[in-house]
Length: 175
Image (cartoon, rainbow, N blue to C red; front, side):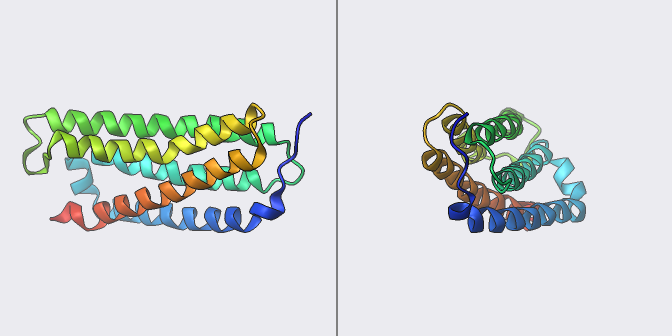
């Protein structure tokens, strides 16, 4: 059947991550409601906000899944892999929209260099990719601690990316 996830060693990380991610997702939703006209006016911003929320929800879902007692590691891996792929799809959509904005002639003052836009998109992609890797490691027997370490890295990357996006949606968008 495979190993079960040893929750105790990772318990505090997943509890803290679930709560912090839910709070940060709420902040981004509030930022969107406050600045909705400005966000909608920039073609890539709704996708960027959606990608951030999807990545934070990914943390919440995977963290809660990791806290399920006596769960087979392959099952947690499958959950992380599937939900990671969904979040990755949002990140890809956001990246495509960023690149389209960079090439658009009507982007006006919000147009940035294509390199900066690609870097912003890559940050979103790279932040959720560790969940996919960690999920695959867990699902296909690569080791529980190795898989959870990848997921922990993803949690850190998503938090960094989401905080930057929250700042952009709250402050930078008004400049």
